[in-house]
Length: 127
Image 1 (tube, one colour):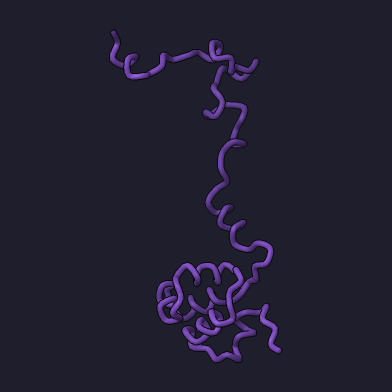
Image 2 (cartoon, rainbow, N blue to C red):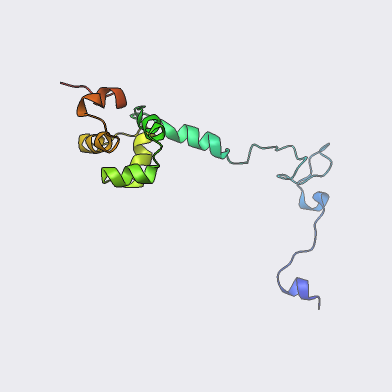
């Protein structure tokens, strides 16, 4: 007995035997280069996922990333100085809503006064 067949390997099947051949497609199986299906079944690229995940409904753009980078500070360093997690910094920079206390901590960690809150977080309504 053939050892490959005994371990579950299947014999090659032609496109005409599998029933997947479409007239005029040259017998190329779906999902392979040259098939008609193209890239319709492929996942979106990383950059488009990242861009679509950045700002959603309820998210607010802010200037935290720009200020952090101009201070030549990493996300981890800003998180350490602010006493929050790096994931929180990532979410804030992406525009996700956060508590007022978190905003205050970030402002202090960036060396800014509370009066600069409107410049960093434009969505804040000062009362």
